[in-house]
Length: 203
Image (cartoon, rainbow, N blue to C red; front, side, top):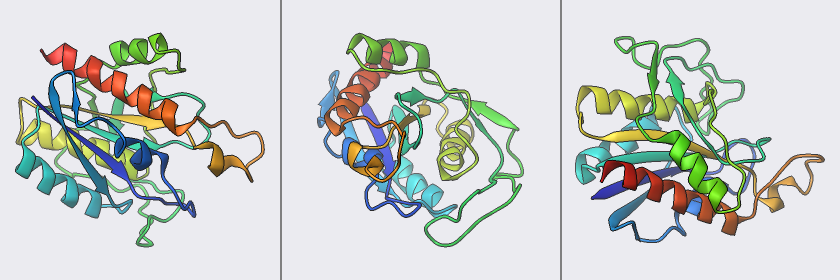
């Protein structure tokens, strides 16, 4: 079995993205599955292009995108991606789409095909906070999740997919009063057990 894990580069004025910092530290095998790690740009469309090339090259059984959700205190597998780009801030190339469909021929929404509640339970059993999120936003995170599930629907019917958001790292909140954070080690642990739960659900 093969699992593709993607994570974004820093965006929004940050010098680091906890998603990629954690993904790159994950083991190369989890639950007997090979883990493939990929950094994607925080840029509308370009993120989908990089993802599409990786899906075609790797043909994973599971694909999970990981992103930063500043302001959340826990690790949050996402339930749903919606077919709209509506950017509050510009992406890393200066793009700021407003109320634009991601794929005009796509449905209004896709639900994750991962065992999100089992993943949350596994993270909590590891002693870390987690919950199911019902909104991946309308920025590049939702854009990538929707594109991943669109690809699964249109081209890779046997592939499971979804998205996990992680909190800021402590270093990111030094100048952000009252913002929650989570250590890199804990994010790595949370992602590892979440991926293991996803793999176990497919086996």
